[in-house]
Image (cartoon, rainbow, N blue to C red; front, side):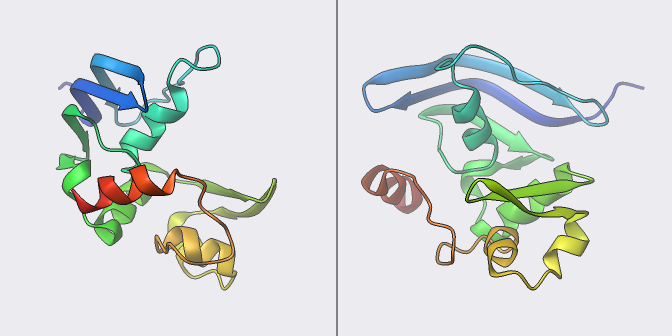
Length: 141
C-alpha cells in the first residue's frame, strides 16, 4: 500500500516582490517520513515553509496539507492542520526556545507567546515581520 501524501504541491508559482521564487514547483511530502528542506541562502526554503503554513499564497498552483487547500483555510482551521503535521513542536521566539512539547500540551500552555502561536493570534508579544501591505493584500484575497 503506498504511503499517504501529507503535503503535495502542484505547479506552484510564487513571486515575492520582483523575484520569482518558484515557477512550476511540484513537491510531495509523505506522511511518516522525515523530509529535509535544504539549499543555499536565497533558494526559497523559508518561502516554501510559508506556503505550506499559509503565510504566503501561491500565485498559481495548489498547496495541500492533509488534503486541505491551504490558501482557502481560515486561520483556526489552518493552525489545526499545521498542528496535525508535528508529533512534537518547538516554539521559537525572540531568539530563544519559548516552549516545546506535543501540540495538545502546547495548546494548554499559559505563556502569552505560546498561546499567540498555537491559536494563530495576530496580536501578542511576538511581532510578525511580514511586509504589511503584501500580507494584508494576501489575507483579503
